[in-house]
Image 1: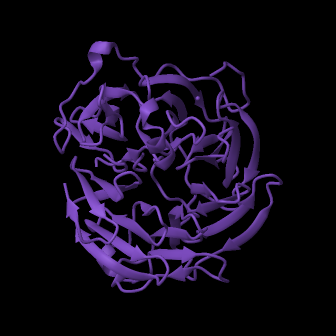
Image 2 (image 1 turned 45 degrees about the horizontal axis):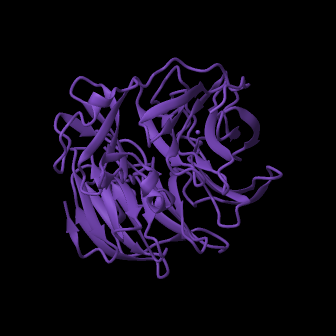
Amino acid sequence: MYLNGFSKKMTSNLAQNHSNRSGCYGSNDFEQPSLSFFPKIPFTGEISGLAMQRRAFLLGAAALAAAAALPACGRARPVRYLTASSDAQGRYYLNGLDAAGKLCFSLPSRWRGHSMAVNPAYPHRLVFIARRPGTQLALLDASTATRLRQVQAGRGRHFVGHACFSAAGRYLFTPENDYQNGRGVVSVRDADSLAVLDEMPSYGIGPHELHLLGDGKTLVVANGGIRTHPDRPREKLNLDNMQSSLCYVDIESGRQRDEFRLADAQQSIRHLDVSADGTVACAVQYEGLPHHARPLVYTHRGEEQLQAVQGLDWLKLKQYTGSVTFAGQGTVFAVSSPRANRLTLWDAQRGQLLAMHNLRDVCGIAWDARGQYFVVTTGVGMIYRLSADGQSFKP
C-alpha cells in the first residue's frame, strides 16, 4: 500500500535492458543494501532521526492481497507499507514498514521522490518518481528492496506527479512536462523496461495525477494548469492566465473524451482518486487571493460539471489540499490539507463533510483494505489510523 507523495514534511500507493527515446539510463541512485542493512532504524510510531516526506507511499490493495510475496521483517512480519522520508542532513530514503509500523528496510536515494505506483500484475514491483522538476524514474522490487532499473525523462521533459499502470500491468503511464513547448504529455512506457513506446497529450498544462477508470480504457487526468520550467524549479510561471482541467482520455486512440474546468481559472486540480463505481474525487489548490473562499474538493461521475462538496468553510483549509483517497467501498473519501493541519472525511454520494481532524502537517493518505481503515502520515514523522466513519482516530 502506498501513501502518495512526499512529506517532510513522510507519506503514505519491473527487467530487460532496452534503449529508449526517453533518454539514457541514470546512474545507480539507489544504494543496494546488504543483509545487515535491515532494519536500519527502529520504528515505534515515528521514524527516529527521519522526517516523513510530504507524501507517504503505502502498497495498494492489490499489493495487500499478495502480501506473502513482499519482503519479511521477520517470518511473521511482511512489509505492509512503503514510505519516503528524509533525515536532518537532507538525505532521502524509501522505507518498508510492517503492519505495526515497524521498520523492515530503509533504502537510501540520492534524489527526492514524489510518488509511487504499484504494478497490479506484480504487486512487489513499483515505480518511484522524482519530485518536479526531477527527471528520474526508478523501477523497484519491494521483495528484495532493490532498484531494478532507472531511466531519465526525455530531453526537454521532466516528471510532474503521479503515474499509474494499465489494468494488466503491461504499460506504465507517466505524466510529464514538455517544458520547451509548454504542454503536458502522458508517456506510455513498457512496465518492465520503462522504455517509452508512445505518448499522448494530457490536453492541458501540468498534468499532476492520473488514474485508470474501471473500464481499463480511459485515463482521467488532473491538469494543474500551471506552467513550470526546470531553470526556475519551484516557480509558477503563468498564474495570471493559468487554466486547470479534468480530462478523460482514451488510451487506445489518445483522443480526449471529455474535459471539465472550474469557474475560477486559478483553481488548480492537482490530485484525484477513482472509486470502484467510477466516481472521481478531486483535490484542488487555489492560487488566487488568500481571502477568497473557493471550493477545494469536487466529485464527478458523469455530470455536466464537477460537483463541489458541501459543509465546510473553505478558508479553514488555507487554499491548499494534499492527497485524496477513497475507502474501499468508494462511499467515503479522505482529503489532507497540510498547510491548514487538517484531515477531512467526505460522503461521496451526498457530497457532504463527515468529519474533520486537526493533525500537524498531514498529507499522505492510503486505504488499508485488510485493516479497513485509512492510514495517514505527517511531515513530523507520525502515522495514524482513521476509521472509515471518521470517528476512530489514533496513532
